[in-house]
Amino acid sequence: MQSLREILQENQKKKVAIGHFNISDIVALHAIFDTARELKYPVLIGVSEGERKMIGVKQAAALVRSLRDEFSYPVFLNADHTESLEHVREAAQAGFDEVMFDGSKLPFEENVKQSKRAVELAKSINPNVVVEAEIGYIGSSSAIIDKRPEASLKYTEPEEAVRFVKETGIDVLAPAVGNMHGMMRDMISGAAHKRLDIPRIGKIKQAVGTFMTLHGGSGTADEDFVAAIKNGMNIVHVNTEIRIAWRRGVKEFPNEIAPYKILPGAYKRIAEVVRDRLKLYNS
Image (cartoon, rainbow, N blue to C red):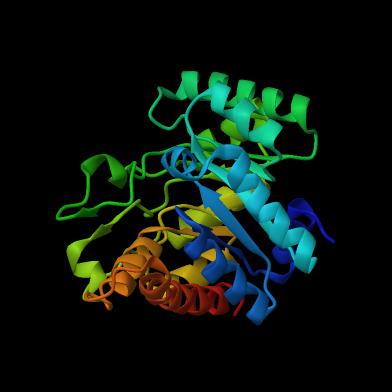
């Protein structure tokens, strides 16, 4: 079976992207995995620090590994938004395929220093692990908000991206290009969408040449997803849409109390989101 790195290399040639979806429970994991397997697309499962506290670091790794081994299918696991070197170590030792170190809240120089340490630490444990880091502010959680944070309007410059990649040795860059974690309320209904700076994505890609991730994809216009991928995005993250789908699904059974009767609603709703997104990312 291909590794995550090999799939990223293959997808880059095809100009398609691997879908990255976060989970907080086994219901979401099965909905995402089953849908990806049905469509025959590789998939990347993400667990943030908060989600890892809920599931367990070793437990998340074991769950994903069990699906990969049982079905011989390319499903991978990312330690999403890891904010400390100790948690980088923990994820690498547990066998995560990717570790995303998030030093975006730090001053640029300190982000460079800490991201470099994260790369060295993770690869000392597993030389094959894919390490990602972020520059630029795109928010910090998948919340529903009324107004876009001013800080999220400052985008990554190609020149700083080149320096960041060169000095840290990361495999994957997560830039700020109009993306943002969470969604504004009018995005839930589809009345508005996030819009990406597509020319900037192309310029950063051309400048750094490395793999790139689009974080905060929920609520993005479909045509911007497609254009972002064609211009160099290799991984696309969606989390808020998954969480909204989970909540809508469980609310469909207000009179039930048995989890195994309620949670299939969440499974169905999450699968619908994943199906639409994977088809779009691979179009």
